[in-house]
Image 1 (tube, rainbow, N blue to C red):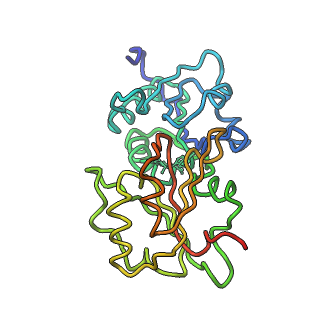
Image 2: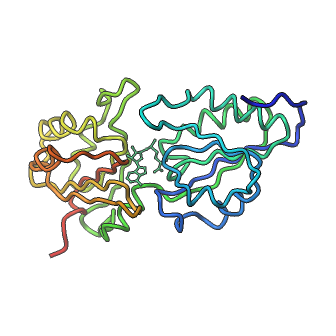
Length: 249
Ligand SMILES: C[S@@+](CC[C@H](N)C(=O)[O-])C[C@H]1O[C@@H](n2cnc3c(N)ncnc32)[C@H](O)[C@@H]1O
């Protein structure tokens, strides 16, 4: 419940990227902003170590999924952020990775703008960059990977999006970073094969990138389903696809 206080126009909203997990990947700016918080609305993938940067008396509201319970609706998160800001609070919306990548930032920016609340963004390290650093494999590679594409393989209904551009996805000169793609991996692999992607194309899954419990699965388009069949991937997973992911030999 948000306490019922009088409206005070000095509030503000900052969308802050918490990075992929390792607290040392927070930016100096993110740390400074976190220290100035009155209220923080934070996602699931934000660790306790990162929350330690908040002032002791900051109000902390977890708005992600946990323990099988459903997450807050996006409209509720927007309403909460605006209500606190209208009470004069400095509200931090702390998100995993970078707020501008698959982070529903647009809805929160629109809500702040509609309520005339000043809003700022603090960039974070997106999961793909954390994963590439862990793998020590560059996402772009001279003469091999000239194009980098970020896609989500998860539609609103939880299925593989029907409008994915498979011609672009099977482009041999591209590296594709797939967010939220584990549950739709079987139809994704089938479609990539149907669109002619070579069976030996490297595919890597990084679970919990940059965290202490990080796991890496190195496979090919042909072997990835078999290699993941008996593994329970419970943490966030990034899938990276393309020739740039071929091991150095
Ligand atoms: C809602 S999206 C948020 C992405 C985030 N804004 C970013 O820039 O990384 C959540 C998805 O990001 C990916 N992800 C986030 N953190 C990750 C991590 N530490 N390791 C692997 N994948 C991660 C997973 O695909 C996860 O399902």
